[in-house]
Length: 287
Length: 287
Image 1 (spheres, rainbow over the protein chains, first blue to last red):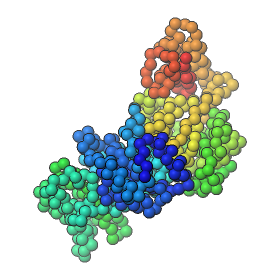
Image 2 (image 1 turned 90 degrees about the horizontal axis):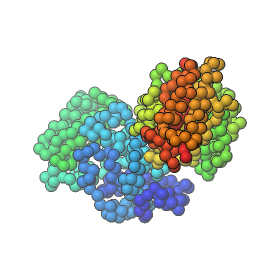
Image 3 (image 1 turned 180 degrees about the vertical axis):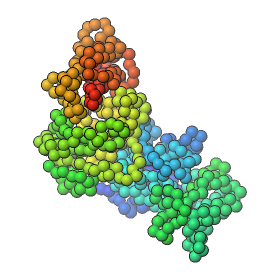
Image 4 (image 1 turned 90 degrees about the vertical axis):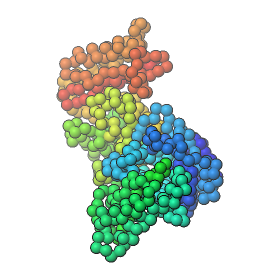
C-alpha cells in the first residue's frame, strides 16, 4: 500500500497503477479509523479494482470553538488498518495541498437539507463538507465513493451535490457499524467518560424503541409526534445525555412530515451531547 | 458532427468516439457564434483529438431584467459554423438537463475577484458562470477548455475555480477577435443601432491610446490614474457611450494598483453601455 501526500505524487501513482483502465473506489475519511470506516474500505475493495482512502481532518467543516485541534489522530495506526482492510493507496494531504493560499472557491448545497438537523447547531459545517468532498472527488476521479449511513444527512447532501453538479461518481452509503451494545461507531466516542459510554447506548435504544412501535399495530404507529416522543423520552431518562436534536423528516429531502406514508422513507435522527462528545445516530423507517 | 441534447446521449457518443483514449477540447458557449467563438473551436481542434462545443444560454448568470429572454439565438447557423470550424460534437442541453428540478448546489468564487468590474453591476453573474462551467466540466471531463480574453474577468475567475477545486482541466484563454475597425466581437453587438455601432469602436480606440501612452517614454506612463483618464476621456467623447466601468487592476488578482510595475500584468478593462448593448473590452498591459 502506498502512502501519498501530494496530488502530483498521486497522479504518478495513478499512472503506475494503470488507473485509466481500472475502476477506483474512494473512501474519504478524517482518520482515526474504526470498524465503520473499515467496512467502507472493504465494500470499496469488493466493488472496484483499486481502493483509495484519504485521511484529512478538514478545517473548513469545523467552526471556531469546535474540536478541529483536538480531533483524535493516529495516522500510523490508520495506515495499518487501511492496508489490512484492502486499501491500495492512502492520501494524506497537508491543509495547503487541498486549500492553496487565498483559496476562496465555495461549493454549497443551499436550502432546507443543509439547514436542518446538524445544520442548526453547525451552520457552516456542510459547506465545508461539500467543498472538501468536491475537491477530493476532482483529485481522485473515483468511479464510486463510500460514505457511512451514520452521517445520514451528510450522505443525502453529498448525493444531492453529485446529482446537481453532474459529478461522474456513484455514491455508495454503507450501513451503520455498531459496538456490541449498539452504540454507533464514531471517532468521537473516545471523548466519552466511562459513565457516559454506558449511557451513550441510549441513542440506539431510543431509535430501536421507536422502530418497534412503528412496526406495531397501534393506530398511531406512523405518527411523527408519537415516534419522536418515544425517542425523546428514552434519551431524556439518561441524566448525562443532552439532546441537541431529535427529529423525523422525509428520508430524502429532510422536509417536514406528519406521518410516515407507505412507500416513503423517513429518517429518524438524533444528536446527543455528553459533555465533550456530540454523538449521532439514526434509523430509516419505512413500510 | 453530432448534435446532442442529453448527458446520457453524450456519454454514449463519448463511448463510440473512444473518448477515453483521446484528448478532448471543450468550448462552452451561449451560442450565436461569431469569429471569436470560432477561433476557440479552431484552437481546440489544433490541440486535441476531439472537440466538443456546448450551446447553452445559462439562466443563472442573468439577473432578473437582464437580456436572458432576448439573448440572440440561431442554433441552426451555430451548428453549421461549429462544424466548419472543426467541432466533432455540439451539446445543446435544455435548462432542466443542466439544472434538475430543485437544484440548489452553488459553486462560488468568493472575494474581491468577483466583486469588481462586472461583479458590481452584475452581482450574481459570476456565481451563475462558475456554477454552469463547473457542471459542464463535470459532464464533459475535458482535457482543455477554451475561453476568450474578451471576458477577461470570467477567465481569471474560472482559472481560480479550476485551481482551487483541483479540476483536472487546462484553461486556455485565446486572444480577442475584432471587427476590421477594432470592435471586439460579441454576440451582443447585434443590439447596436447603426449609429451606436460606429461609436462602439471607441472602447478599443481608448484602450489603444492608453496602451500607446503606456509604451511611451513619458514619466507617468505607468501611472494608473493617468492611463485610466486617457481611456475615460476617449470614451466620454462619444455621446452615445455610457461608461459602466473603466478600471485598471492587477492582471491576475484584480487587486488595486497605483502603477504598473515591471514583470507584473495589469488589466485595463472597460464596460460601456449603448442603450440596449453593454459591451466589454480590455488590454493586458505589461513591461
